[in-house]
Length: 250
Image (tube, rainbow, N blue to C red):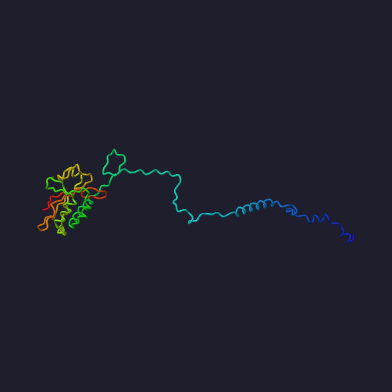
């Protein structure tokens, strides 16, 4: 048996090396890690993103900074509007493009007749002239067509100076149920009065025969037994073109 001291001095180098060797499967700390290249790529990518984010932030205009001018689409071709033909009352089938007037209703003609008698009773010559065309005439039907008929406006001014039409206030001057209404084609088929010449009729004229219910007040004769009101279209309304009446100033 050897002494303990001799046993303790025995070199143990190789045994110590085996004792410190890493177990199987454990990573060897003395070797460089394989994860280092991947980590380096990740760091470089992160630095690149941070570098991009250091620029100026995106700027967008506010509502107050926007222009008030209305936007128009680019590159849109617009056809210029063509001027429509002048309006007419009638057209032929050969006409390619026409502008037709909408016919006025009979109610518009009746309104003019009613307003005419209202202004006669009021003896308002200025307001009465607004219902007349510029060339309106008062034709005396009992004259047999002789003589130049006077202007309708001047004719009624003379009557207002000579007679008191205010006496008709409250009296039934005419009854609407007794009116006879004729369109231009009706007058051409059966002429209603010799003074209405077919060649002077317009295709939208209206002729209204008005039997007078109150022609006299006491001993004063104010109106004829009937008045034929010949109306002609003037834009969106009718105006009185002719007044035919058997009446003479005394």
